[in-house]
Length: 379
Image (cartoon, rainbow, N blue to C red):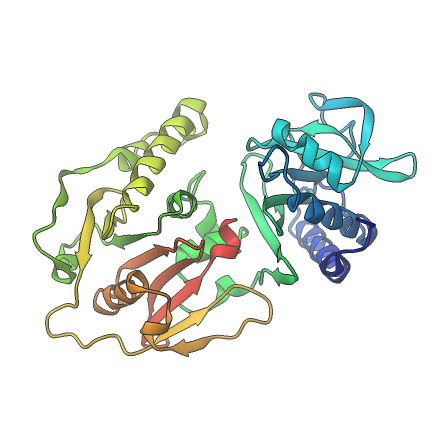
């Protein structure tokens, strides 16, 4: 396909350039290091265009999954450099995809002999470096890494077919915004960095990844009031509570950066998130102790059915809407809304089989359940 044949690339490029320019100004104002290479409109458009057409190709029946990073080949001493750089085009990207689809490997893109080219691969990339990830056919995510000592990325925009979604960085400043949503949308917030990793963020990503749909209820550790919203008996209650995640976070902070700790944490997250694929709800305390899975949510005795839910998405131009709970998507969404309506100090996280992800929380300001649609931030 000819360069420039994907209209969304041209429409999005100036917006993305402005987002990176904004982050550069913020970093300078806060005295932070800005390690990236601010991308220009032409480079952004070319990378989006090539990645989009590559995402629609097949390489031996496999869908290409690649990550492109805009940085020079001499940035990292451990970069893998090709003797002859490859053209930034759909066909070469698709052919190369099987070799670089594992997490943490980025194809380096930079100007070579007057044109953008793929010069090799890199694992170490600077903060605020322009990164584009091909997640699925026609689905692209533009992001950058926030801090030098972490692997966390901030999603800036998502392109899906002809639809462009730009993340609103001010979404986390909504009244009553849950800490989980804050951690996903505002990486300058202390709520995002209390620990090296945010447990609920990682659980959300893992829940969404298994593709079966699921519900995770996060309840206060100090009370058993949530039992009033669960139909008994619970077939899969834990005795004693499963505490691997809690034990990991009781270890000294300096241990949490080690490979041993990270591997154990990843296994524990996968174990808990996998339970959400079982029909019913998984129950976790605010101390990350697993209490049950496969639990059946019911309306608390004496409570009215949830009448309405306020729905928001952390995207530019998105406006809050108040809907009937039956319009939320399915039974999981309805019962999650009812649970939070009855247990107002709890959270409910719902993953849909189609990839949607919703965080339900009670809003004292609005006096109703608030549904935060955050799948754009989890890609």
